[in-house]
Image 1 (cartoon, rainbow, N blue to C red):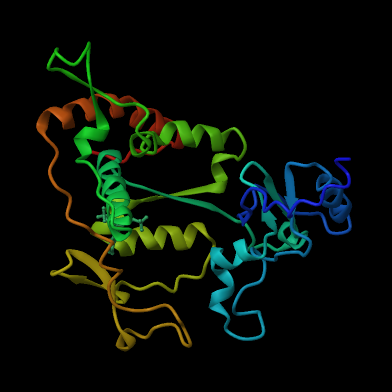
Image 2: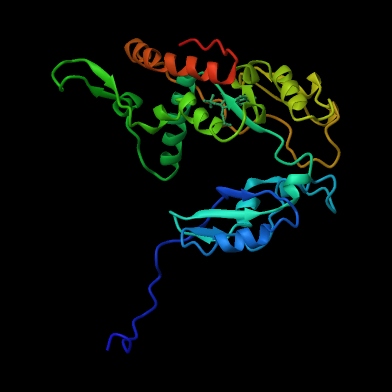
Length: 288
Ligand code: A3P
């Protein structure tokens, strides 16, 4: 019979640890364990057995100065193995009554065309590291309009880096679930040009004491970006946060777009950018 057949155990589809898509944030003693345990009965749910405490335990309060504890990578490692289609869930009721926990959802935005080019370059360098090539941006971004002989192009709306620049689409999905007050938006272009004022705004938005200072940042002409001043600037004691410039991969030189491509992109992205600005009630003055 089939029952008698002893086949080798099938390895099954690959499992991996993933960040939670569902977080039960409280209330303490409200039945959070039961809710999570019962939710885990669902086949498409992978629930963390132990509380992750990612958003409520901070290095200052913890035993040591464990900066590492704040790394999302460690959060992910505290999650159970799951299949690709499963929803990862965790419960840490302390999030609800820890004032500092989950105070803000921070979003850094920049000119969506620059972001698109940067995204393309990132994918390209990831592939190069694995010894693989990558077509020129325009081959991925453009499709022939009205057949290949028209000589005219249209945007390939399925190109992922293009879709990722539709900030309004993604933001409205979040705003359907979280009020705007939960967000703080950082202007990434200002952050790159003059980090201090933008970082001050973020610091204030997070309710932090004003500890960031202009002299913590210096302009590095070689890199064309601001970098973090060394020990002399009075870095945070015991900090494992490196000083100096960001990795070489941050602040890549962008090859120029063909004027016709830029026009096509600008025409498409402008209404999306305006809608995003309306959604968040702020103007970014992107040159599109
Ligand atoms: P580019 O490499 O396209 O210029 P992320 O960290 O989200 O991947 O973003 C990378 C981008 O951060 C870089 O994109 C760069 O423009 C921007 N950036 C802002 N401030 C920077 C800084 N001080 N040093 C390096 N890059 C910075």
